[in-house]
Image (cartoon, rainbow, N blue to C red; front, side, top):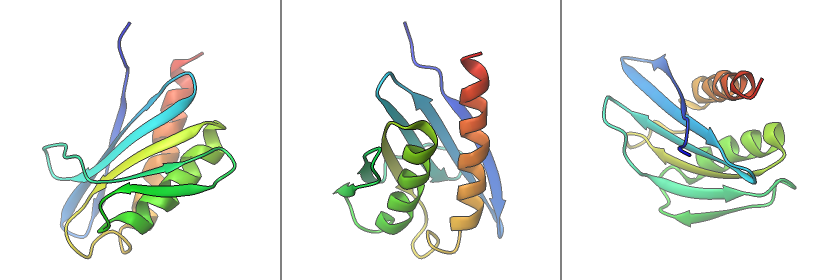
Length: 113
């Protein structure tokens, strides 16, 4: 058995932000980055009750916690989120990334049908 990732992108200013999400039996794992090459970034975890903690890094912590809260609420599962964006872009790109999360979670729901 392998992991199937739902991947998407959104334009923000002159950059392309990408995301990839997979769903496990008890968790959702998501990666968000800028550019062509996926990169591990600030890690956060959010539980289904929306309690959350940063695990690694600080630069994109706030947007990671916000994205994790949305993923956990939509899935009813723990959300592990990695965010790696250029310095200072995280908060400004939040709306676009939230739209990307909505699309990616919709894609995951379709895969299970």
